[in-house]
Length: 605
Image (cartoon, rainbow, N blue to C red):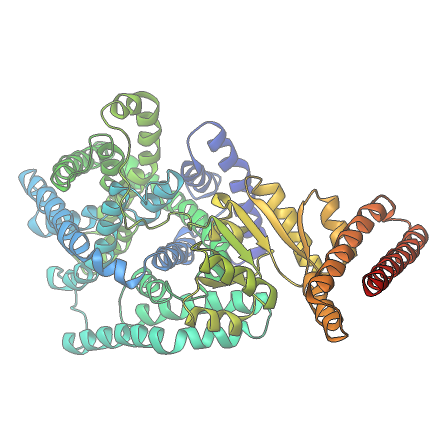
């Protein structure tokens, strides 16, 4: 099968993932192992359904780009600035320390110094895709080890740029063409354009797209934004993932953050799965089997050296004994950027293609066995380490903590605003969701935590913190959307109390059918206040007008309870409503007669 037949190729990828990944998770091996094994099975070393894994790998690398964009969205600029020391401090210590140790061991083993330096620099890098995926699954990103790991991974993306620039100088092939100062100027110009454009243009552009009220267009804009930034970075030889990360950071404080996350998340998951499958397919087992002892020595050797160096770094960083093992294992593996380094090193003549294939295969094997090592650690060693500590220490700069939202207000129009302002005035903070970009912009100017997005989307509710919410206020004016939000909340967030705005009696009935108890009709109370004003204008005393309105309110609510059992019978509803109106008129007429009689008695006295 060729890659050109995209329908059959897609079917092979989807079929392999659907068959193997659930099985791997059922066996307790995790999704990453499932994807890697699925890739091996359908690749050249397996059934041979896919004959061009390199093309698949280049396409699937966009999954890593999307993942870094998502991480950037969770990291506001001020938090990134606060992390500058661990990023450039401990990040440089990890890369240089591991590279120096690996190069020293390689030269002692007899490797030429050029081989040793390039191989050490490539092997010092870790897999961002595997590490962040595992950290996300284990909820480690908010912990001290997760923060430290993320800082080092981010520095590695930056360090990959000078590593690639160094290769032509170490090779025996033709040096890279072009003026290096000019290339550096282009790179700085692109980074400056991304930063300035993000500050000045991105939010305005997204606001303009959002006004179309077309969800698929906003999704296209989100993906186009990431693709555009990645293309700019690639054009000047910089890391696409680093560019996407910068774009995410610039939008981290935007009102469109949650909507961007929910739009990009499904594509990120699919492309990351494809990336892991492509890594499995790219393992050249023929080259590995041709030098099995060399491959085994390389694999065990570089993992052992990195484990020793990383253990020392983790201890120096103050990580607890319980946190260090998983942290060390995640950073000890090779990384996807090593594929690029070794490929370009072979092209530059640093070493032969055969050596490059062995190094690439070794890195891929390290990515394959790391999840297995984590499974083994969880089963046999984790309980012992857990006894040494009270658990992971969370930091104040959590990257992926759920949004703290004890109260969520869905819909911040004329009704939701009154609810939200009352809450804020009472000292209660709420997360506000609205699908009107202009309304969101206005409320954010007033300092309210308002996010753009469609509250009928389950993924957006999760991002907004609905799983931790104590109360969800449904104040949207569309009846169908209101009922959909209620259904989602009751199915997925049962811990939250629902307070719902009802447009009319039929909407009230529909909410009652779903078991909602806190229901308020949107115009009922305000109309009663207007009615009281009319009564006062016509000569009624204020207290008497209030009594009449209160009596009308009680009677109306009781009438709804009477009609509730007959809500499906329109004729019966009309009959009860007419009876109710007649009874109310008779009640008020009797009350007027009693007041008139009392007034005459007082006059006679």
